[in-house]
Length: 559
Ligand SMILES: [Zn+2]
Image (tube, rainbow, N blue to C red; front, side, top):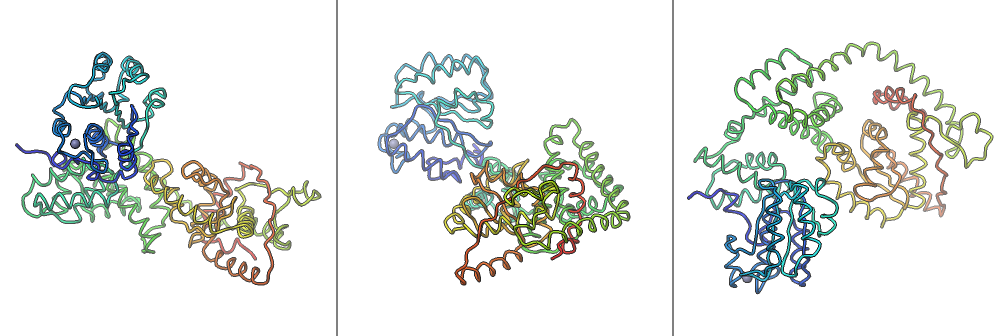
């Protein structure tokens, strides 16, 4: 009988599990040190190994001679628990039977000692699907489990599991498996199964499986049964109802050119040929992401303004959930992108008035800036009129982040203060913590900002301030607009509680040289009091406009 690849290659011990190193290490240590608790909860997206880990755990805790935290595969317990032929390892899929009865059954039988093994292990998958009655029954069992019982609960949706259940479990969050790790595993399987396949296809499978190894193996399975000879990227596109890379490129150009007629024809064409429109939008997003990454990381040339790619990918990302949910994805996709293209056309039409309007703003900015350049750095802040006579410590900046020259002055002060108190240890710690941001790159809400943070260079860090830099002025400008959000992300996701300073690489090099000179002359940097920010919402619009003029950045900065 044919056995699906994902079943055939399901790991038998912890060492074969791909990409969950931290959880595996902790569970193995618990077994080695005999510190097993009575309830575990595994969180994580589908197909990344939650039940696999639960099953291996169930076998290992029962093994009579575990080898380095893995089942020995020789003792009678291991033999009995192989392929789950024992009554003491009980699997319940709450998604398919969410009744109170099953849980009540557990409750009635949980006190009976195991018949074959040391522990009775209950594996409850998709535990969030349990009815509230079942939940309560389970809760009672979890409150006072007998010594011989262990519960391993798994869920893709921890938010739906009641707090009281979570509080009784040791919780582990499992990660999506990285594209590289999935490719490695696929290669291994292809070699063993003698599947002839282009490397490019493996990458494509890995990307579209979204971090789930099970889906990746199923996808490989489908391809292998579709074709015995060399499997090419065209086979992959064909079987998954996708379009070629050239076609994705054409579609992108069509959208960014606001070529509405061709766009509609293309979508109709895909639809009539049975292509999967939702997957095509997914393809488009990955294509755009590659362009953006290439632009920032490899300085690759691009056809359109980088922000046009970014705004398109943001839009698609934002709408993806609704597209998937929609009763008619085709219409939803068409409407969404038509609106986008219409906006592009409108923007172009307005661009003739644009220069006139911009020069007005620039002249206003120059007035503010030249007024302040006559003072030294600590006075460079524009005091509002009524505070002009106050002591220097209370100098306030008007117009908050809405005023470009003010925000730049704050950046200067932060840089000065970071240099005054910066140290290597803080910097190294921040660099370590930044790595954790990688987990959020594909987050719907913050992914774009997280990528911006990851693309930055950490230059100097003090206990209160972190200074990051980017090569291009336009990128600095863009991120200054998101300063509050970036600060919040660092706080919330990687526990860095600091003010952020954002500057260009060029500015950093200059300041660094100045700093080195100062230190060589045995002089010190003094801390400059950072002015308080005052919200001034009605000015926000002006700031937006100024920011659209990234190219004029140099004119605005009069020195
Ligand atoms: Zn054993």
